[in-house]
Image 1 (spheres, rainbow, N blue to C red):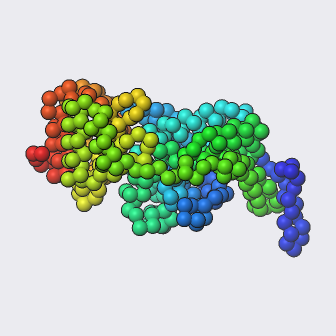
Image 2: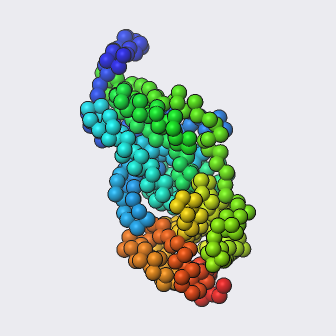
Length: 383
């Protein structure tokens, strides 16, 4: 059917012939400017889906200390905070059959780990400025009654929980890719996977018609609703239960001290991942700034504290982020990662196991003192 023309009837009948995209860059530019061709489905409240571009050629790191190792064609987001990852290929590109699937899974897995909300917010706002789009207009489609920081925190949580869409877009979807998409969509409970066949028809002058066909919706509809976007947040009681039953006494003391400090001086927010986790934002310079996340991984058993340097740098500037890094205690495991962060401009998520903190006398007290010092604008403070 895609080889047949379509007809436009106005003053006369005009045939529009199916026409391939000349270059992949042309194809990508079209999607960046007109994401409505990818708007299918609806939001949680039943409203029509409207994708908003976060970034084109979004960098994907493979560790908390590295720069981008890969580049995703497009990253979009909707008003529910669900990220949509898009890879674009023309049918003439042989990678559209299998290789693109491995690429996409690589991007999704690493993006879920290494795209903090602050990085996504910065990328979105830079994209808006580059496109000449006012931020209040762009955010008007996304925020509702939330602040930008709250919205991007939700996006980060969606990523960590695997609540995202993966879209393979091509001018023709081969049967091999369609079969893989439908298989993945049946198996992945939190992630929706689609192939979008976007056929272009051209007439005289600049007249074009774009016809999207969606593959994978049947598999999505067959998923259990309970498996998607209903993940419960970790509560403080849930964290305390795990800390009390699974952690050694010294690790339990450290985890409890961190959470108590966050509850008293900042704002605790439970994660939505499969393992228990909580993040803390502290009030600094009149805004809530995400500082750290405590994660109690189930498999393998591991407890670690990760610092959100991307958020700190974004909200408070590079100088204050660097000063915070220097004020943290000299725990060997952490010090090495902070040195890498210094070279990278303090944009990552350096982490340290609680066992490494337990091995250094006064380490957790030093961390809390460093946090308080940053909150107080650089003045020395006791905890």
